[in-house]
Length: 235
Image (cartoon, rainbow, N blue to C red; front, side, top):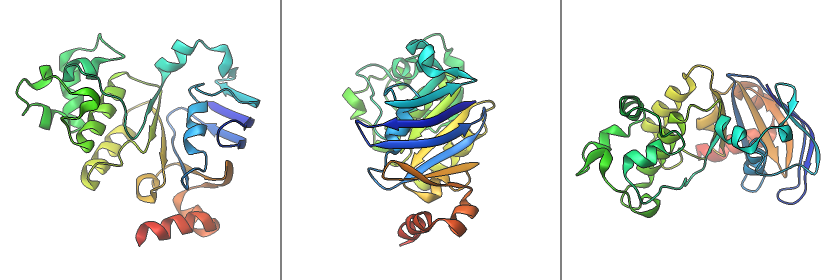
């Protein structure tokens, strides 16, 4: 279980988080307007930032007592524009888990919609990407980054607007596949309701504070800000 207790983070988004509990295998979401502190909160889980006050626990032990390398292996963060290197598709996919077999790489790539476009490239998985993957579309880059994350076999996967450039069908298929992976804890960060509506628990952030938490149904009934975000999306 991941647990945040009375955390204050002053330097970035003035976060003040009283309590968050995330159990193994949970599918949770963090939503809020731009600048509300969503990304800062997510990066606390990876100890990119250290809280000025409060505690973060993993299975009862303080996060700061873990080696950074251990945290990075267990928790994988994927941003809206994750970095792709000037290297082959294969090398990019295996980065972070070089021992992964080609068979597993291709199997997961098929499920994530990557194999479908990589197989059409001149040298397939040996094709070299331009820096930041500029020879791919934005949606293809996001699929590649997500596939790389899955191949690292994380315990916790944090997706920060990581599907925002995909078409709606691909986005739905990929998120459904990820949610079905056994024992993975998924944290979705978004300002789009459709991406997070089926989450087990949704945390609503406003100016660095959690102003509400609950399911999509509960928040539509009880949280004005959530209804506003939902209404803006429907326009």
